[in-house]
Image (spheres, helix red, strand yellow):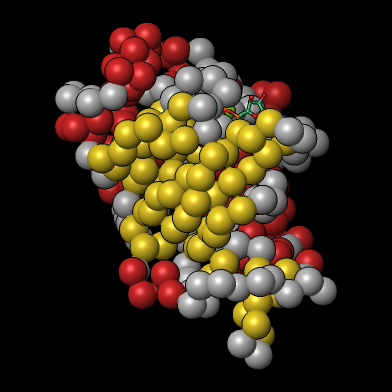
Length: 268
Ligand code: ADP
Ligand code: MG
């Protein structure tokens, strides 16, 4: 087990009260640094929209929050815990598999491609993790899954397989599946980019409702209208750095950086 060298007061950031805090996060693939010191925070109940051109590091950043990638520098803290590191006896250690699994179960992720299990019905897809990972009793998991299907407007397709559902329906099942683990944080990576235009609205509406219900969300999206009306904070990333961040009225309607201006012109 590797102990981490801690040069700052351990978890001093906990006092600031944000649910998610990234500080100077760095990540390289080989010699290519794709995250060059990302610092941002998301408070409980807030929605952050991450914008930026392809290749700017948005997906990588989300994946680092959710243990799909490890970081090479900096810190990520979710709900007062370092991502990937546990504190024991005043020292910080790399989490063991059980600790990683527990931490990950609190962070839901929805991908561009819906990634449903093709051999399971919508209902079974939603029940799978609660039953398999959280050891929730089957009947309780089913009751909860049916509630979630209702919440995303899909009670009528509970017994359908993914191939029988539209892309928009599959994505709403994927959101319900993420919610089934009762996450305190939801990450969305371009959740509507793979959808036919007429199916985008229903998915955004579900996300809008989640935001209204107080879910903390980080959303990578090119849907500027969604960002403007739902985000508390909009972050524009380019080349692995945060170029500009602030309320939608500032970043979207009065951008200060020429790169933000150029990007917004290209997508609006
Ligand atoms: P975005 O989501 O903003 O389009 P990504 O986070 O996917 O950007 O990618 C950022 C950069 O990292 C890109 O240059 C991409 O080619 C590179 N990259 C992403 N994943 C990998 C990987 N697994 N191996 C090597 N390079 C990668
Ligand atoms: Mg991406």
